[in-house]
Image 1 (cartoon, rainbow, N blue to C red):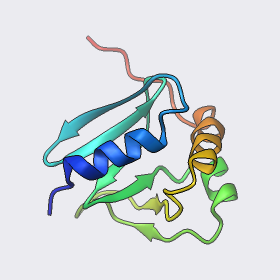
Image 2: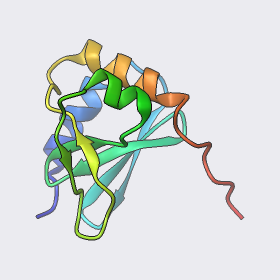
Image 3: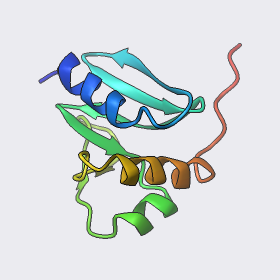
Length: 104
């Protein structure tokens, strides 16, 4: 099942307090970037983030879910209604994430 454009727009609105949020469509799903780093994505209308040390600390009881068959598990963000929490989550995750790969 692909994610809806409507859910993507909702998540982008929830993240609008952050500078430099972008996304890329990929096979019916959406990869979410914060300041050019991949933080997670929208898969089957679920907002999943990488299980970084900071993300796990902020969401210790979050479910680990597969974004798609064969992928690594990611953390399910349940509280997508809380804009302040989402802002803090992505800001905390930023330093844990690898630098973007250089394009050849």
